[in-house]
Image (cartoon, rainbow, N blue to C red; front, side):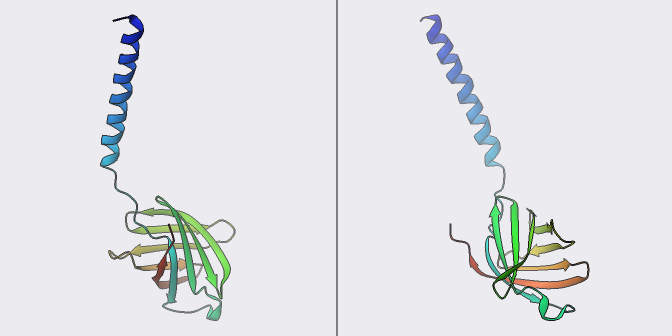
Length: 132
């Protein structure tokens, strides 16, 4: 066997072992829950009157989330953050709004708080998942 053949076989063995290691380590990682789609928001106390958003559209890429709050179909605020386990934490860049929410095991209901800086509790029910 020539030196070239040995080099190629050694490269294949190293790359094969590396791919095996990556697949083995990745198999133990859990996938993020799918929360992308349209959500209907019900506010527990409406201190701000009718100015609160009534819908939330969530875009998701793995654990990273962008939530667009809408009122009458018009965007009110765009919040970005992460989904960690069953907790959603997002904040707006252009205003002092933050939202923390817990996802129920069914992945169809959120219970959380929006700070605007007033603190308002809400429940959100999934209307439809995002098309994939």
